[in-house]
Length: 65
Image (cartoon, rainbow, N blue to C red; front, top):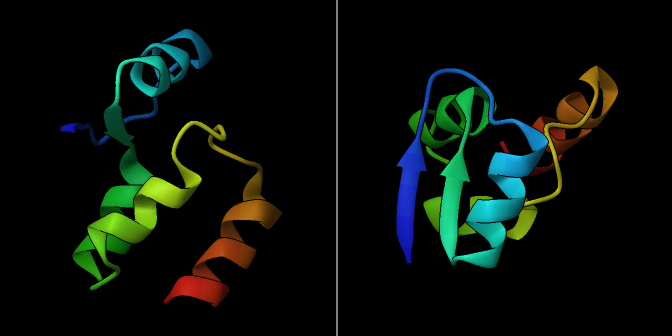
């Protein structure tokens, strides 16, 4: 698996491409979580599911931080 990390967000087509080609697309929210100690492998479980809205990100952070 390849990993593409950015401090921005990926577009929907870019996330779809990454998912279809076994590339982990870690956007800014993932990077923040990874930097805070969340396992990189746990980020793969939300890969390809979009950025989510603010409430989704808050729930995700509360669960995995």
